Every structure is written in C-alpha cells, then in structure tokens.
Length: 113
Image (cartoon, rainbow, N blue to C red; front, side):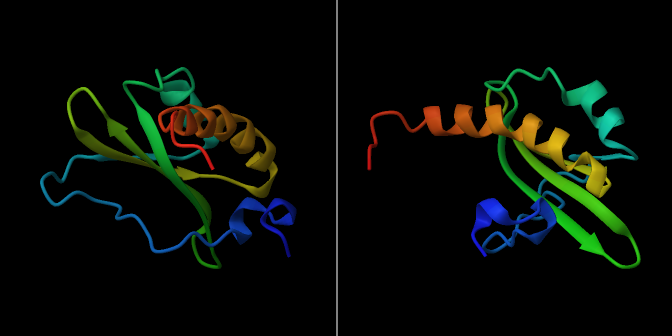
C-alpha cells in the first residue's frame, strides 16, 4: 500500500523521536483533544516553532494519539506535544501538517533532486 493511501496511524516512520529531553524534564505538553492543541499551537509561527516530525500512534489500551516534535529555533529548544486524537481528526491533522511540511521543505531550498 502506498503511503498516500494509508491512514496517518498506519504510517510507520523510521526510527523514533523521544518523548523527553536529556537536558530538561519540562519540554512536553499533553492535550486531551486536537481542538485544545490547536488553541495553543494552531497559529504558531513556523520559524520560531519548527515542526520537524510527527507520529500518529494507536494502542488498544490508550487509543489514538499524535506526537508532534518541535524545535524552537531562536532558543534552541526541543519540545513535544502529545495530543489525544480520534480517527475523525485525521483530515484536520493533515490540514495542520501540510503547511508545516512545506515550510520545512523550503528550508532546504538550493538542494534540488
């Protein structure tokens, strides 16, 4: 199955990103819904808050959740957001992530395939 045909929770990214920080115990936030997450991060400046990775996880016991990983570029901060989501949130999550991907790709301008 092509990645484009998969649900976000079916995508298995290589390796993983840690929900934590070696240098700080205060680098993550938990949100009980995608709406609550968007209240804090929906209009975050992509230069100050560079989203560099996401993972949608599903577990029979804990349900669906989205892990979003950020770099605060001006301060060199590593942050993560842990968001409780449902399959019904998938389209809105994609809409949130697409411009973040475009911004990230733009940072590699000058390197062409």
